[in-house]
Amino acid sequence: DVVMTQSPLSLPVTLGQPASISCRSSQSLVHSNGNTYLNWFQQRPGQSPRRLIYKVSNRDSGVPDRFSGSGSGTDFTLKISRVEAEDVGVYYCMQGTAWPSFGGGTKVEIK
Amino acid sequence: EVQLVESGGGLVKPGGSLRLSCAVSGLVFSDAWMNWVRQAPGKGLEWVGRMQHSGGSIDYAAPVKGRFSILRDDSRNTMYLQMDSLKIEDTAVYYCTWDSDYYYTMDVWGQGATVTVSS
Image 1 (spheres, rainbow over the protein chains, first blue to last red):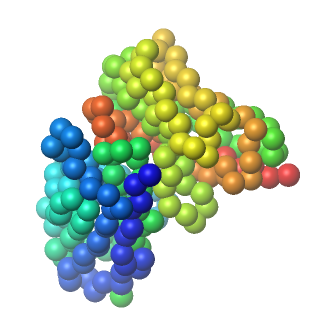
Image 2 (cartoon, rainbow over the protein chains, first blue to last red):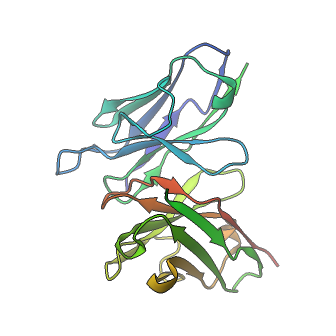
């Protein structure tokens, strides 16, 4: 099984400042077809998860461009260029290259 | 627009059974790849299982294999999660999700159905 490890567990951020979340996998997420199936999800308080980023760096429709994804192999990052109040919530990475598995989540809160 | 609506959650005793439904609209259901994902109270997300397009394979995570079954009714555009031999640790919000292609993409999520297993 592929284990996904996120850090930090909690991320207090000042409004307007950047935030960065790390996600590491226990094995390479590069599929034999050349694609890397690494997604990022946002779960606001009391809501269902919502996909933000797919295949490492592709933003979903309607996702603000302050969100960006990067990385390769086993190391991935979600960045928020300037945190807004509506970004509060828990962020999860998920790999779909093998049987799907999620990271433990990173809670983003405003300082 | 793809929409997923879960129903059927509730309180059940250990060892009991429950069936969740996921009503799907906005896509050709018979071609859809669909998942169940759960979230225990205050915890993270856990994949439960996936159903491929109609006639395709169905896969389950180890903790539920042999106890849970994923079913579909193409005439009703509905996927089901039949949960038998329920354990206290199955207590969670259960979400259905849609994959836009063969790989686990989880493009769209439902609002979730709450299952509580308690004596």
